[in-house]
Image (cartoon, rainbow, N blue to C red; front, side, top):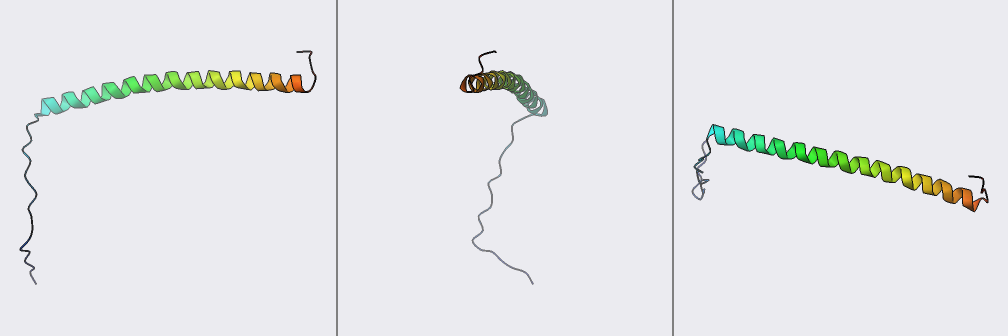
Length: 72
């Protein structure tokens, strides 16, 4: 059984003007961008860890003050 479609709109064919070398360069550029983002994320993570340590120290200090322990 065959089916016939009269109102089918064909997809336009795109002409690709990118050579393999250009595509390779684009991929390398994206990899470089990702590596730069990885470095930035590592810096942000380090800062977040330091903030967490400092905030925990301040919470501990506040608890000692609240308990009347001034021997710290």
